[in-house]
Amino acid sequence: DVQLQASGGGLVQTGGSLRLSCAASGFSFDDYAIGWFRQAPGKERELVSCFSTVGGTYFEDSVKGRFTISRSNAKNTVYLQMNSLKPEDTAIYYCAADRTLSDVQSGFGVDYWGQGTLVTVSS
Image (cartoon, rainbow, N blue to C red; front, side):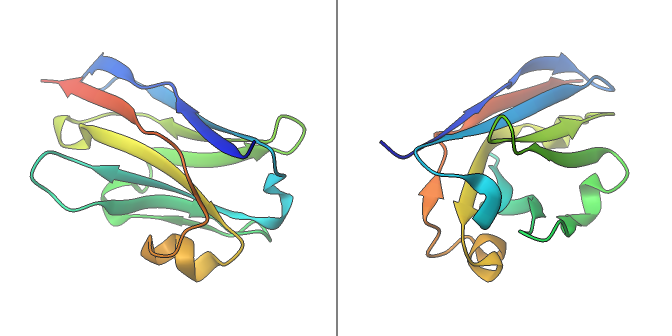
């Protein structure tokens, strides 16, 4: 059974930190680009960060310097470390995996999506 399981969301105060995890089962992350997206109420889904198969990373401008992305091949898991959180980071966060980086970057035609984890940052 192929699955992406996102976890780690929660309620945190402004300036706090959370680490999101995206664990894959049924396939190996090694050959996949991985992305983290978020969707806030009333807003479109946006790409927050992504990790290419060769280790390249991307961060949306508003999270640069605050978020980092990493992966553990042994655990088949990708992490999104979120520091200095702001109320505008409040959203449902989704992870996505696809063999093609451009699909992850666009969010269209993605092979696998995680179910989403809610991040709420209080002011």
